[in-house]
Length: 189
Image: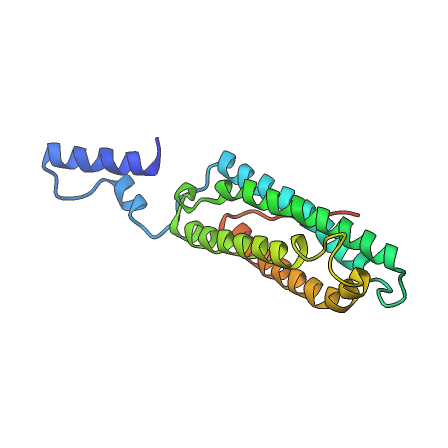
């Protein structure tokens, strides 16, 4: 029996019996103790965060590869790296959008998790916008002028914006995991 159902049963019992003192179960429920998170809900949260961690680690790796010796890399290399980064970003955007329903605040078992869920979803949307603006639309294989030079010039700024979005997401994901009472281990190499 869920805590809410137990509380309702106690309240109905009190009304029917005309008792003035609440039953022991109702006293326990009415304390400020957060509701326990069901194991299945916790596992779905954890699974989604692990999937996102792995996908976003791929984006982070491609950002590092793109930046590596950027000024000395040949035009074909710069465009190839930008294309691979863009492909990772597109995949990450789809993964973020697909994972969003898992973290709906209405699904959260208590107010603390609901608050962190809203923040996490907000950061997921912000990251998705950053990936769209600074990666999907700008790290294309072709563009006006000497495109490799444009990628070299704007690449550090664009990748810094992506990393800023990733950092904000990871912070929100960490707070959410703590609120939901589990830990997502770092990805092993």
